[in-house]
Length: 73
Length: 217
Image (cartoon, rainbow over all chains, first blue to last red):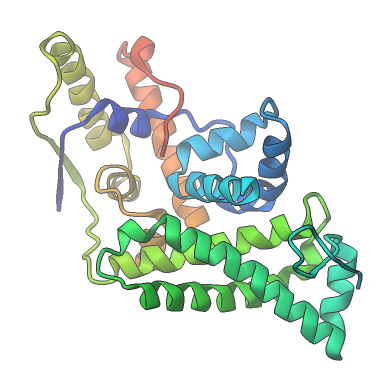
């Protein structure tokens, strides 16, 4: 089977994203509640390892965005 | 269990994990009330997520979306009750609960959206002409060709199938995991390893300066 694609800049970024240091989806799920809560109270709060995972995993990023939206009301 | 009366007048549990865990374990009326309240929290999260993702279900009516929210809340309830012992109090209990609701609702929406769609496992990437501006076209084509070549040459067949399905065909990772009988974790690890190989290959071929560090998916 063949995938025909116009490799847009977004597709290239997705294919070549640097997802090191590695964090699994399960580890992300275990930490996401604490991370989002802290982000809601402090916009400057960072967690590089978690953010690296979110930048490389669309579904986890979507869940994090939904949780943040829910907490912000 | 402690009840407080918040500003909006709706009775709710004090948001302390220990009180929740203790109350949910109670076999009597207190436990019943706690489980009912837990389900309400989950329903709030699942409705929120189903509403956010409703564009993925264009044929679904209001009742369909509500049924999906209710079913996801029921599934999430089972998951939360099974994982109560893992709650460590690093966030508010309600935040911890919400993430289960969001997870189950998201999985349910994507599964429903993809239920009649075939999920292929592409092994070849064919570049098609895009809409790049003339100024960026040559540079973009060089990178695209190098990337296409690295996908064909440097990835294992499994890495190629998973990477192309997830990032070119845009199959959601949980849908692909479901179809392949594997886990989201396993697929993400495969994707991670594939990306490392692609980056190494393009770095070796002199494309390092053009490589982005981050993505949005």
